[in-house]
Image 1 (cartoon, rainbow, N blue to C red):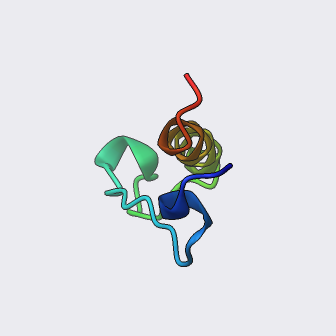
Image 2: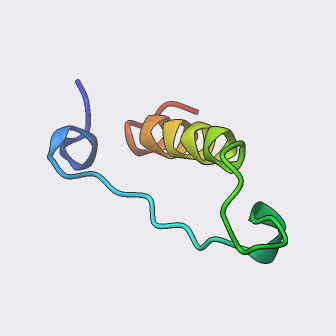
Length: 51
């Protein structure tokens, strides 16, 4: 059974765009999203009690 904190909508992981995620023009690099998606997946699994 999933924890209600995971199944209730909306579910958010708030992140700050750091300078290393941007190019010289201050535009966020698209590859940073992959790491954030993985972090959100791990947090969602952790909220269900999955180790």
